[in-house]
Image (cartoon, rainbow, N blue to C red; front, side):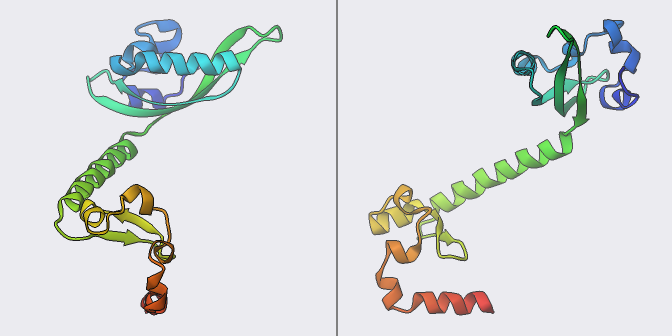
Length: 173
């Protein structure tokens, strides 16, 4: 059984895939993703465990879509694989947003890295989240030694200067 939603997702009628009447589902998986999808599904079947996949398909119209799949094997009493069951959903919009966010993050990181000023970002507990290359030059401290640590731990003299109180006031309003 393949649901009617298959036609909207793939451009093929559900019957086209049953017993590979017109096309095998594997044939619409993007060629660059096919091997990984096969390996991940086989691992799940071998382990008799559900598998989660995200990959691209090529629709009947030639469009590329991202899909999210969760499936698992259904086995006989003797342990033989009878069939696969699962769900495949269009994840194109989410994947496009994820790619755009990643691209924007990379772009922003490149801008911040190139700024000829010290740029730091910290959270509401004064833990450093970002320490740009200019700060590394300015302080002699690499980002790897600072990011993730509390500012008062990195610079104990900030406590004496009342930074903690100023920061708390700023957070309140």
